[in-house]
Image 1 (cartoon, rainbow, N blue to C red):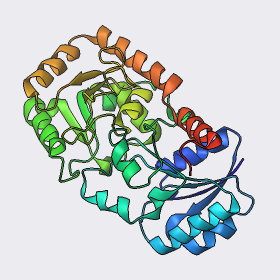
Image 2: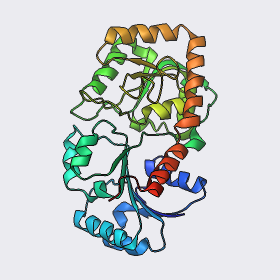
Image 3: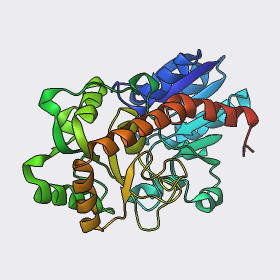
Image 4: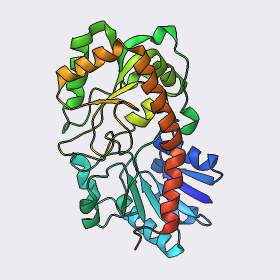
Length: 313
């Protein structure tokens, strides 16, 4: 297949970079269009001879041009895919659902599986597509001495203002564990092989997703990224995700309920003292992601839905 892909390919670790590379690993041809330098009105011509148009929206701009491009692609018989790892419902950016043509691609895939009625009411042909791990980077590295530590968190402290748990979590970890805890923010540049090394070296990795009140069937890529790269992960429980929906507590990872700080402390302390249990769960989580939750799995699922025409008008 020939796939024209509009997105942000400058960061090698971006979702677009990993998904487009996965298409190629599966034998497809990919034409990459850098979104902020590709005028929307040129997209139909650039899609001549394409089998699929795939769009991951970063800049949310030129809405009129985007609507016209999608209409032209429909006349050409080229199906369009919208894909994101982001959550929109419940956040300030939810308003984009009503104005951005990206959501009206023929098939819109996101990890938010908790709002099907809302998406349907807005005419969005939404399909739940959880995040994954890039298969070539889904491996167990060897620990390195300078990264050996008790406890780590990888990710930003500043997060969505609607979700106050992230800064609370990091502050609590720093206050409770002091020098035993390290926070790696985006400036630390923990990417690629170095991230795998960190996860192999840290005894316990604490994670988080934007779990707004009532949010279920959603998580960020924190779970597959951490498990797939070999981390032993503690993550807040998520209905229909960590309760056996995608992952199983105490088999692939360990979960706790948001706000139960004393339970979190006891859980961390327990697993810091039980390396055999950590290693068993760490390896099971890695094997589970490698078998079921890589972008190879996700891309195949998206293309199958497109081939079947699910929900398309």
